[in-house]
Length: 460
Ligand code: PMP
Image (cartoon, rainbow, N blue to C red; front, side, top):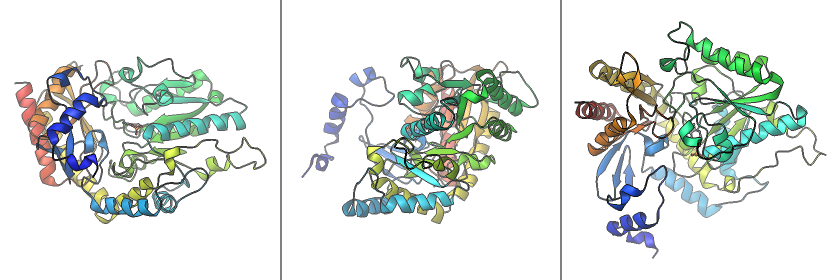
């Protein structure tokens, strides 16, 4: 009998958590007097905590991850079957689930051919940065090593990924950072850098080109962008933006790296976020929804043209990608991912995401008509945000404490929503919604009702 058989003693679990677990993104002082929240069980869209309270989860496990919902026994079975057959082998060998999942994944990504496995979104992004640097060293005489990132985007928690973070509160205490990461302006029209303009999308793209010209196009190797910015405020790209960004990158021979860690696997109503905007990437990274949190897995996907650069000189021991991820050799990840993908396909979850996303957006727009606190509503698929303001006319951001009060009120009424907390000083004011792709009309309506009630109570 192992300790997990003691889970009926949930008071003990809470005390063990209080005494020994350091929670992510958390100030722990309040836990000296208030119980830390420990989640115990999940089914479909719902989770239960250690006190037995039930919640409707509108953020897919806190950070937009559990795309196919909780309690999927078929994923558990697929993982179990694989683990008892072969749990792990790494180095230069492959595995059955990795080969089969790669094949299925590539079939959804025209133009891409290769999958490199790791186990977190940060790590998948770091792989791209290393590939870009190696290409610069081997093929551009050390030039083209700079990587552009965008204000308000986020690409992970490791120091390299943080060097590419456009979110001040996430990075400000963790420098110094490695050189060669250069910021470009954000593309949130609601907070336009140029006032109200007709062609904001083109101007935001032109602003990227201005940075490229300033730095020197021969020094820039790649640009890393979220298709829809997640934690930086659920920022959908403005009209004309991606077309122009792609054109600029092609002209200056800059590789396009799209971070699909949040948007990937159906979240935006397409298999991948970039597929909504007609862009053809050179690198795509993904993690969270790839196995919906049933196992840790991340993928760096690239093209045959990029891949060919790493096998062009078999006699040179420095020619191949000199990188390994120990847990990129776990077979549970691709085994879970295969079943996760089957579920999304067989249950028509992409179509459901489009339909439920429209319902959620309509609900949020309806709330905006009645609540002056909502300044802007944005979203794509089941990935939506409502930016709260203290004053609609001036667009002064709502104070973070009051935004958190809305989140807490929803939680108190049994619905878990998120907010852009702790990422952007003065701008942690966007409510974030990313329910599982299985959401029903009733679930969506309940989420909207909870926000309605919370806005009424907090701003009464
Ligand atoms: N990219 C984006 C867009 C993310 O939102 C995140 C995590 N929230 C990451 C990368 C990093 O992923 P991980 O936490 O798995 O390292």
